[in-house]
Length: 240
Ligand code: OKV
Ligand code: MN
Image (cartoon, rainbow, N blue to C red; front, side):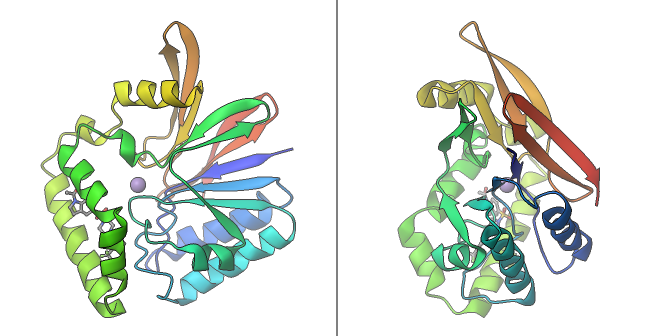
């Protein structure tokens, strides 16, 4: 009985080490597990399921092989791959998981999020997020030809880079009160998320009751995953 949680692989053509590390992870670590949860930013930029690349085809093939062998696969959107749709999910043998979601983790309710919705001190980002997550905006973008979407994504990325260089580190981290609010709302004492690229286990005080926030790591330098078994949670990291 094992479930794995990963996020922020930011898969892309320019970093084959990460992709190869992911395929190795599927073969060596995920083989035979009950479920694999991918909590967002799986891809560095997803511009639509109709953008079929060698990378996306290979990833879908590897995941669907794992799904065929009995592992349930769950995909949550991140801030960079929010355009992943049902077509790609189906090709992966995966289920798209809403953000937030509460799962029963061996008897313990666990709140799963990508994490960007918790970074509320970045007001500019929150406004951006609302816009790009709206069905109208997404339908409009998906109606553009692929090369236009690619151009738009690149333009937005360079915009973000120049904006974020002026932002203090703490406004780009989660808001502690927002974490407590989300956990109280969903009645959980365990939160698992990614996005911030600050892998850690944070003990929490939830109105006098102990809780925990587990932050998954990004796969830029090393691989990261949370391993869950009945009564056990372990944040693991390895060289890619
Ligand atoms: C983050 C902000 C960019 C603010 C675009 C498809 C599309 C993904 C994307 C690309 C850019 C998000 C995902 C980023 C925050 C910005 C600009 C302003 C205010 C597409 C899939 F639609 F173009 F096809 N993007 N990024 N901004 O670099 O993370 O916070 S981003
Ligand atoms: Mn993210």
